[in-house]
Image (cartoon, rainbow, N blue to C red):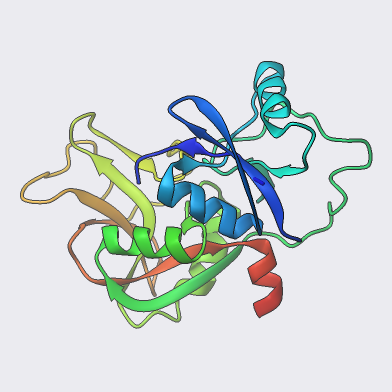
Length: 230
């Protein structure tokens, strides 16, 4: 079973809970975490994030005593909607895999627009990569150098309405690695929105590009998937 959250745009099989229009809904069909998350995002919004005692009580009530998936996965531990896991309510002895693998990235050598790349990552893996630390930037540089295009899409997007850059994962753009002349607040928004990519070679800094360019891209993949393919 599993629980879901609504949105705009997933070990062993278990049930899960979903949130539909602010109501938690129990899905009785057993799925893996990845399949449950994919189901939630396709049909509703997402698996639920439990950020307070009140949220936890609502999930327990909806679960009805069943063991269910919630939207928490380890990157380190974070919620499926990409927000940080601050509120905790672990059972004694959990989590039991503190020595798990670090983030795993995968380069997709298909030439897609930014929106197509985002959709591909979310349907087949987790998301386009968010580079919110120097450590992740080093991983990205190592992966990007094998690209067949000069630039590689990141999960970085500019909003002309608000006039700032943001990560699709929900992280604020605090750590930055822009190439000179890129990443300014006054981006040219015509005729298409600007999105962020990393140089595949050279200094491997970030650049601002029209979202309709066709590039390789980097996805974050699930730990279980990464272990199987490593």
